[in-house]
Length: 281
Ligand SMILES: NC(=O)c1ccc[n+]([C@@H]2O[C@H](COP(=O)([O-])OP(=O)(O)OC[C@H]3O[C@@H](n4cnc5c(N)ncnc54)[C@H](OP(=O)(O)O)[C@@H]3O)[C@@H](O)[C@H]2O)c1
Image 1 (cartoon, rainbow, N blue to C red):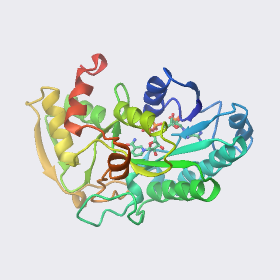
Image 2 (cartoon, rainbow, N blue to C red; image 1 turned 180 degrees about the vertical axis):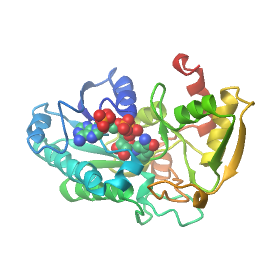
Image 3 (spheres, protein in one colour; image 1 turned 135 degrees about the vertical axis):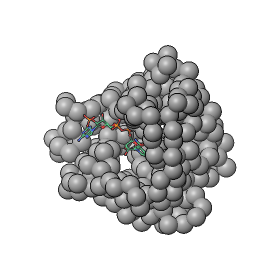
Image 4 (cartoon, protein in one colour; image 1 turned 60 degrees about the horizontal axis):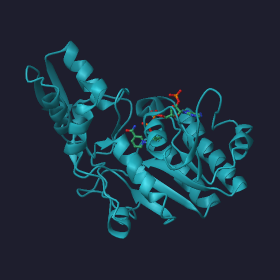
């Protein structure tokens, strides 16, 4: 297949290009040459004659989205509208990467693919608007919701914990925000399997298991051999930030696991592999 990846320089975009290039013809597009918010760039995407567009480009700074919701909706909703129109014109299928933050996090169990989304912050609301654009304009689409992504050599939660541990000997992380730490190369491999199926629909693709930010930070410090750092628990209510994350943002991969046999390994195993990557040591 000829596959166009938007947000090709991002952590997932790069992981996807690495996994898919052996079997597919890949075109990676990103800022500044290609901007999903520019109407003129719709034609640029169509001119690549894709069979499939994997749409990763997004405003992913969750707190930045809370400070500037109009920017969040311009990129995540209107930009996705443009990408979906390009897919319509190119007669291409689309795979839209969405987020666990489309849910409000008020329930006590992980969210399934058919649970009712209700976003509680501008990032989640703008990504949910993107889902609606895709569903309105296309029939051949996959919506893949994922959570808490990290990849080697990128600025993400893992890198931030390690950087803070370099500067301070005492760290605190919340133990009442839950999610699924997800290794971008694992997600890329699951997407590679999914796009072979033409089994369109909504999917939750995350590494198995649930962690709090505290659990995740503890495991990161353990892998880094930083038992000199004192880690304490705190609560979301005590942690001031611009965005309000869902308290329980954990997802269950039900559909891909039970209909297609696509499962991601346990998050603890994926994190161990991350620490074996040469650039993470
Ligand atoms: N990171 C997570 O924890 C997480 C969790 C759940 C879902 N997701 C979703 O997963 C996808 C990939 O995330 P990621 O972590 O790989 O994000 P990332 O590393 O921030 O990559 C996003 C890419 O999109 C580009 N981009 C931003 N605005 C654009 C525009 N107007 N036109 C074209 N490209 C633009 C960015 O360029 P600049 O860097 O120059 O802005 C960046 O290269 C996103 O859709 C995100 O919403 C992420």
